Image: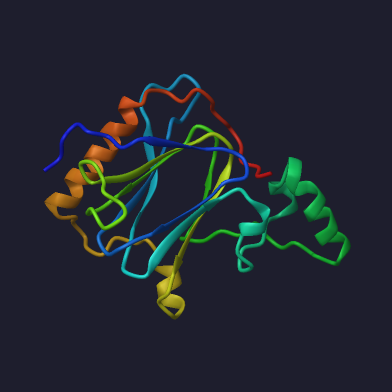
Length: 193
C-alpha cells in the first residue's frame, strides 16, 4: 500500500485559514521538533476522526469561531487592537481555553492529514495533506455530533489497538515529516496575531 510519494507541503503563514472535512478513519497528526537542535520530530498529539468531524486551522481573527475565546496573553501584532476593543467593551477573560479539540500550533510544527483518497482530494500513500506551520495558528476540531460526550471524546481513538492499515498510514506520515528535515524557523512560545 504505502509508497515513498509525498504530497506537496503547504506552508501556513499569516492571515491563513484552512478547513479539512474529515471522514471516519482519517487521522490528523501533530509533529514538533522538541528543541532548536533536535534531529527527530516527535508526535505531540493525534486525532482519529469520525464522519461529520472537521478541522479548521487558522490565524485569522475573523475566522475564529464564537465558541473559542482568546486570552489577552495569547495575542500579538494584528490581534492586539481587536483584543483591546473587546477588553474596553467589558470582556473579562477567565482561564485560557483548553479542550480535546484545541491545538495551539507553533512556528516549526507540522501537521499531517492521513486517510483514504476521496473525490477532490487524492492523497499519496494515504497522505492527504502536510502543513508546515510558519506562523502560530489554532487547530480547532469540530463535529456535527451532539452532546457533551461528542465534545469530550473528540479525536479519541476508537479502539485500543489500531488496525494495520491505519498504523502504516501513520508511519508513512511520520517518515514524511522526518524526510522534510528540520524546520527553517522554530518557535518556543505560542502567540497569535
